[in-house]
Amino acid sequence: MTSILRAYELGMNDLKLLSVFLLTLFTCLVWAVELPDFTELVKANAPAVVNISTKVNRERGTSRSRSRNDELDEFFRRFFPPDSRRSPDGDRRSPYGERRLPDGGRGPSIRPRSLGSGFIISSDGYLLTNNHVVAGADEILVRFSDRRELKAELIGADPRSDLALLKVDAEGLPTVNLGRSKNLQVGEWVLAIGSPFGFDYSVTAGIVSAKGRSLPDQFRENYVPFIQTDVAINPGNSGGPLFNLAGEVVGINSQIYSNSGGFMGVSFAIPIDVAMEVVDQLKSSGRVSRGWLGVGIWEVSRDLAESFGLDRPHGALISQVMEDSPAELGGIQVEDIIIRFNGHSIERSGQLPHYVGRARAGSEAELTVVRGGKEITLTLKIGELAQRGESQRVSARDTKPDQPTRLGLSVEDLPEEVQQRMNLTGGVRVVEATGAAAEAGFRRGDVITRLNHKTVVDLASFLEISEALPSGATPVLIIRGSTPTFLALRVPE
Image (cartoon, rainbow, N blue to C red; front, side):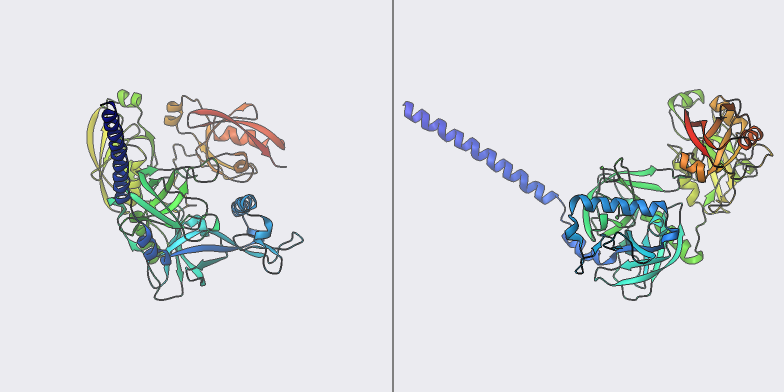
């Protein structure tokens, strides 16, 4: 009897093990069915993805291009021994094509830099990439999947969206299929093809992490509602396409969020809907026209929402209204909160520039604002945003902004409403920082309150103090956002 029971127990254990095995196998099969297969997508679309390199006169080479090359060199020094990077004649070559002579010198004064990726949008030779990939280039080279290399003409570029339209002299080229980024869903699978660190036609995949991300640039402008993904994007992927599972391009890989310079799980792509609006304008006129209101905006916090009588934080709080701007002519006032623009709800202040920028200059727009706790509707005519380098600034006084001096700072008086909001009794705001100021870390929008241990009351006092500055390092107290910070400005002789 004991033997029978023992055999029964062993049999039951075997059944349990078999059940666990079958359950595990079933789970693996289910996962295998659910995981996407990208092989056909890559085969169909890789030929339309290209590598972009540029040539720049060494005398004109910028610090940005040098730092990019240094980063690539450091990567290859770590993972590839020098002998693996020698040409047949014994000369060393960097992975992006620059020839390095045995004595440490360099060859031609024009040097190629492999900076990014791009993709073909029409069979007659139009290509799309990032503006920062080709900015400042003397010559642009496009390398195709069949190893052909053609010179490209820059049709037009738009720094605000970081897009550039190129054209090569070729016909019958393979092209990508363009999708609609507005149809993307958070959690949807996406795939990128590009040339990270010079490795051509590398494929990475992930999901859409978020949509409509606001990423202000160095000019504190924000006209692109970025797609956030966890697709591995690294230097060299810039300008490459982001595909959905249908094999349609839904974005252009543009930026990564990183403390190290490499991928850390967060990357951003320009929506293809926004990109093609830019392309159409670049093709027709070589420039991009954007809508403009002429306001400064502020995020509505919980405390601000309560103080303005809102039931919850939302909308864009108006902190500045430019003189003679569409906003001023249309009746917008400081402390208005815009909660709707042309039917679009404004949940966060960063959404407003996205909608305004895509509005056509000269068209009428309907806005809903909260003023004194009540909603009112305003109708105004949209203006045109000035091109970079043109003037469209707040002018709260008749005083004109100071032009860049030996300090490299162009500043303007701080409007009274901004002084009140920041609890200040004076100061000047940085309009532009170049030269010594840029090297010291000044940014547009910084508020200077003390210079060389002296209080800066207004533009006139700033000029008086700056003109008497001796050469050498001098401390400057600024407010950036809401945080007081000291910068050391080295005054040239």
